[in-house]
Picture 1 (cartoon, one colour):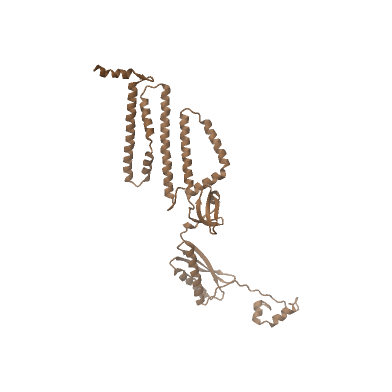
Picture 2: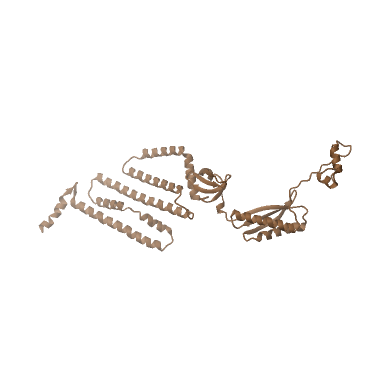
Length: 391
């Protein structure tokens, strides 16, 4: 019996680095129990949150679960060990080191959670804004992810260095000056980079869209970090700076839903008032004969220089340019047939010039050859050319 209890005094009086073996054993036991309690708590919390998330349509709880699942087992073990070490009677110098390790562990865990949150957030953003059949993430999304992670870990590292007693003031100032110098040297590249991020975020156009801007029309082939490549209608590839593209008005024909068409035509002045009044109804019937069109209006617009001018507006329900051209051709041919059947002629640009001959004895006379030709010319032809007195 005495031999059994002789172990207790040995544990209490035997020391390692000034600490009794019994206190070290108790600290290790507490650390293991704390680690098991922390790991079990996290596991149970994740399971219960997963059940709750399965009954809801809110994606916020899914986001929280994914972030929490990034809890580091090593950092939990370090936190449990620090709790056990805190039970020991340490000198003041080591006690301050333990406090610094607590901050390092907490900062690392917060950085890991924030890093995971950035990854999940950018992934969901890319999924929400991705087009059907789109490949991997765009370069702009990758750069945003890299930039946010770099900023996050830089802040965490500086905070940890400051906590352990390192003077980071000069280091931060050096980083600031260096960053300004780099920004000034590469301002054009950075401008295109941020323009690329704006294109990826706002999406005024995407790969495969047919756009027109600044006299260039074509299909977008690639949106890069600095430039965007467009395959023009004539076949060549046009490379444009992202910054310059955002400074211009972009017409995106891929997102065209309907096409509004305005066209006009003119008929001759010998058209009667009744015939002129019937033309809008005739045009309306031609347009409404197609289920691909929606009639808007047709009006006798004005008296032109050599024609009675009409203006017609209709909507092509399909945005395809080929369908618009087919329908416009059908309308033109139908107009030719219907107006011919009504005895109405299309007008064409004409101009009549009257040359007034001076009275006899009042000014110079036309040359003799011209007077002879005029005398031999029929009266109707003389009026057409314009010789003779104006009526």
